[in-house]
Image (cartoon, rainbow over all chains, first blue to last red; front, side):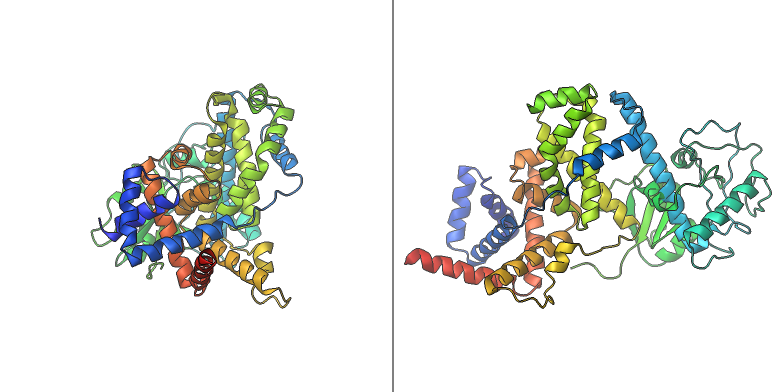
Length: 289
Length: 201
């Protein structure tokens, strides 16, 4: 067994999780291996320090806060599991919508609507009732736009109001995209994305402007991956939609057609999606120690 | 009131029972979230999210299952979700009050032992927060909650082998973080020598 394997055994030894045979083997090895002895001492030191960590105390009124949030989110107070799922989904999507719009608003160059090359517009029937009062959101690509300096939430919101009005009036000038014959308003951003809005260069319009601060939660359930390789930032500028903070929203379709020189990396638990969207960041040039 | 009783009442929509259930477990849940999330506000939000998830999911919860396993899972998931959201929009890492108090630049003199202890705590905390989230998760469940590998496997829905290797890697990473910080292991070595010396007297 090499020392890497021993490290894992030593860790398990510390936790008392080795069976008798393994324990005997590791103990025998330890007797004659200074490196492993040192490692075990160090692990023990870390373990001791962790056991001395203070237990933080709960703030007063914690339970009351939970109940307050409960009443804020679920006025019908039903705990039937189906209703709960529905409420949870609505809550998640409401917050997600607000977060998505806020992050777009924060990315200053994104929301200048007037001369946007990639506006997304959807065709369809009359809009369904949106009980959550959050419809889909306006997107725009950053290239070739009148940029907004500062990108304050107020400024962004007013731009978005203009965009909504313009889109509703169907006067928003669009270049390089076809306007489909009919208009559809999706209930939620998620539905709109699932409806292939970005892939097919469609537009989503807002019926109401949610709070900007919660927009970013819109992307909370999208997987995050990192793009590395020469030309990665150019590729992202071309195929992705900037969300600000070095992140882009990209469709899986585009990702599947990634050139060989670029590489997409994800953390262990992140599944590469088979369709829809994902969030991509650029690889850092230095690996973390 | 027995926990199973409270759970049954929660399933019937009894908010008073829910409140009692919160009081039963809030300390543990908050401590877990606090160790997962560096920021105090984040920890609070994750802890609240945990209990909201309990309320929402309790309809489907089987009373014969181990409640704490489910609770730990909800708590670590709430923390992981929040951390992921924070990373996505830049993550304002604000030092919480605890960190500020332990700032080494603090001019207030402390007795030497207490100062050493608080420095050790600061280093360990920093080292813990520097770990990747999923490493920190298993290490916290093992070291702070004292769960067995099998219990951790149930909470995280990983197999025991993965839990074992992940804990080992988490410890190794934390050990490396602390070694890089300069003086953590010097202390450890001298403590070890002292203990050895004391034993032989």
